[in-house]
Every structure is written in C-alpha cells, then in structure tokens.
Amino acid sequence: MAKFADTLLGVLQFAGCRTAVVVPEVNLHVSYDCLRQQVMAMADALASAGIRRGDRVAMALPNGLPAIVSFLAASIAGTAAPLNPAYPYEEFLFFLGDTNAHVLLCPPSGAEYARSAAADRNIPVFTVEMSGEGTVHLRDAPKGTSATAPTPEDVALILHTSGSTGRPKRVPLHHHHLAVSAGNIVNTYNLSPDDVSLCIMPLFHIHGIMASTLAPLLSGGTVVAPTKFNPLAFWRTVREYHVSWYSGVPTMHQMLLARTRHERSVHPGSLRFIRSASAPLPLEVIHKMEEAFAVPFVEAYGMTEASHQMSANPLPPKICKHGSVGAPTGVRISVMDASGKHLPRGERGEVVIQGPSVFDGYENNPEANARAFVSGWFRTGDQGFLDADNYLHLTGRIKDIIIRGGENVSPREIDEVLLRHPAVAEAVTFGLAHPTLGEEVAAAVVLHEPHGATQTTLLKYCREHLAEYKCPKKIYLVKNIPTTATGKIRRRAVAAALADEPR
Image 1: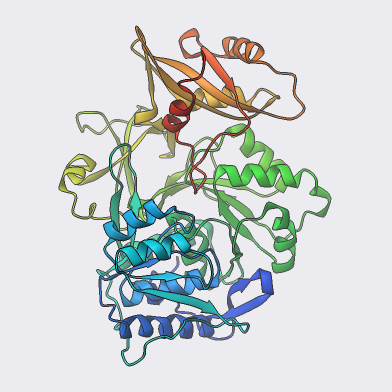
Image 2: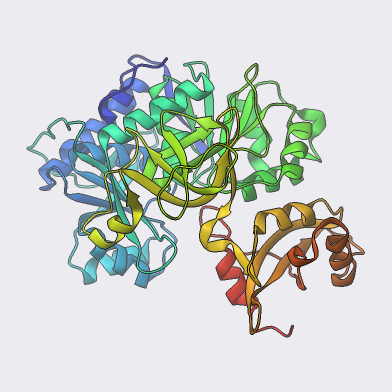
C-alpha cells in the first residue's frame, strides 16, 4: 500500500535526480528536486503578492510543466482554481467572479479573453514563463514572503460542476481529499517509480489533475506532459519516453484506436495498461482496444465531488469485469431507492457514496447540499447496481433515463446495440418530447466511411435486437457528436440540437 500524503506537499516527497516531469516538445526532463524548488519558489512569489490560505488563484494555462508547477504552488500558497483556457470572455467573467479569484495566472502569449475578463473584474494578472532550461516562474515575481505549509483541512482546489440544471456549483476539495484520492489510484494500479504516465487529459479537470498527474507523482513515477493531446504523436511519444500507462475519456480512446489500426506493426512493449474514466465506453470499443493495444483496458468511475476515483476494475491477475466500473476503491458505495432506502445487490437505484476523498459539500449552496446528501451519503445522480462481487454496474444518468409511456428506457443499452452494427462509429441515444407518450426514443449516429447503412437499415437492426418500446423511432445521421471539453457527451444537449429538425 502506498503511504498516503497529508497534503500536496507530500506528493512531492521523493528527492534526487529522478525524473518527475517530461516536456516532450523540447525533450526536457525535470527532476523531483527541481520540481519541488520551482513549486516552492512560485508559492513564495504568490505569498509575496498577498495570497493567503484560502485565497483563490485562477489559472488559464495550457497543459504542460507550467500548469503543473502553477497548480501545486497555488494549492500550497492559497487555493488553486484552474479554468479552461478555451473559455470565451463571458465564461471567464463569470468563473473569475464566482470563484472570487484574487489573481489570474496566464501564459506569456494568448489568453486574451481571460486577461480582458480579469481586467474588467480588477483582478491582477501574472504571467507564467518557462525558460529554455525548464525553469517555471512568475514574470517579475514579487519577493519577501514565504508561503506557509498547508494543513490537511485547507482547501487545495476549487472546481465547478454543472450538475443537471441551474448555475454551476463550486466544489471545494481539501488537501486530505486529494492526497487520499491520489493514494487510492496508486494502490489500485500498483503504480511505482518505474511507471511513466502520459498526461493527455486537461489539467483544469479532476481526471487530469488526479489520475494523470498527482497519482504518478505520489508514486515517484514520471509524468510526460505535452501541451495538448495529439493522436498523431501518440506512438512516437510512447516509444521515446517508455510510457507505461495513460488515462483518458472515450473520445480519446476511439481516436487512438483509429490511429493504432495503421501502426500495429510498431506496437511498443512499454505499455502495461490503459485506463478510462469520466464517461462510459461501449463494450465493443473496449474489446477492440484490448485487441489493438494488447494490454489490459480498465474502466474506472470518478467525479469531481469524490476527488475523482470511486471505483475501478483491477489489473490482472485480479478479475476485471468489462461492462462494470469495478469495485470500490477507498470509498463506500451503496445503491438507494427514491425514499433513501439501501437496496440489496442486484437491484437498480441511485448510486450513493461516502469516504475520506468525498467532499464536504458545495460552497455557499445550502439548497444544493440539501438535495445532494441523504443520511450522510452523497447522491451521485447515476443509476446502477452492485453485483454479487460488489462490482458496480452503471446503467445511466438518472436525468437521462427516457420514460416512454411509463416504461423506463436506458439510453446506454440502445447505444450498445447500435455500436454493434459494423457501419456505426459513434452513437448516442436520447429522449424527445412526445405529445402522448411523454418521451420518444431517438438516436444520433456517426457512420464509418465508407458505409452503406441508412436510417431505415439501422431502424430495422434495432427492431431485431431490442424490445419494441426501446427501439428508436428516429435515427439522425450526423457527421459528429458534440462533446464537452473533457470528452463527455451531454445527451440533453444533443437532443436540444436535433429537436427542431424534421422528424
């Protein structure tokens, strides 16, 4: 078992010249000693700029070493508040205000919307630079004050989650939440100093922060941190830096799968497993991934409010159940009915969680907290069941369940059937309003090229494999299915985009 750190300072416990971070674009290797020195120097600079415990340090930085150093420094001096650098002006204006940011960290070039929004909010902006030797620092950094060490109860990170409706909610995560979660991930996959993680997830998202960065650092391993996800450079990067694992979302895996079909003859031997989280992946794709990459492919279940990972499929020789998101990892998981009664294994209900990595509640939002917690359990909003081996099977978001004439239809079940058709590359099922049934089942499909499938043939295929009430009555053939910045599909957003089209 990995020794848990108490704070994010403990994540940097390893000393010496062992490589902590690699910047592949310039073949730069940064040691643990060097990383720690840079983090503490920036933490001191932030403290000299007036940042105190709990003050929010917003960041609009692309992936890479500057983002990693800035995140750790901000969490030590105050509270890190990473933002998507691709936000438009209006979103920066909202999130900077809602977060109550004291300062904003930006790259030397670009980030015009972020800088403009900060100026309109009278928020000071500091530029994060990286020298050719790989030293990250604040331009014209203030001096004179040293940052004090954080405690486990201090808020290290604040992120927003949109939930199902309404304004985004602020999720404050304490140092002990993140430290425990990182330790859980290390233990789940037996991460060691020999492991090399390729960070392709954005570092403004809990998945990228925890799984791709903090867990590898806690284990003494190496993080390869390119500035952006580039499927064309994947195999070259894996070969050159002996990458042993990576974690991503379904859209990323599918892009790499398409690329790998052309490069299987140069498959390197360094990969030992692939991890997927943040959104479900169809079984058909999982089997294709394992066949193409020749390593175990394991799904995990995580969310911001739990500091990411809650359950995970283990690596061999333990049992991996494809189609499930594995067994609990340091978090207690149960399933409840609508009245708050815990259900026996095998019965479907809402997934609820407890544990040391689960947050204490949304910030300044008593109404949301009253809805989100029941008898000390956090309601995830996901529907699922626990099997006889205590593996969790998710059947969909409760708000996404289609209620057609009183019958409950799980969109994921229809997705799985459509994706088994050889012409279908992507599929997403959703409900459309119906005057008498309440909702009708519909789906959007992206076809492989070349293809010979039509809406009629796909509808016939569904009728052959599904009960009549589950069959889509309309299938839209689209060129792409929109996703969020972290690769999630919002079924309701797809439905809204297609609802006005002729039916």
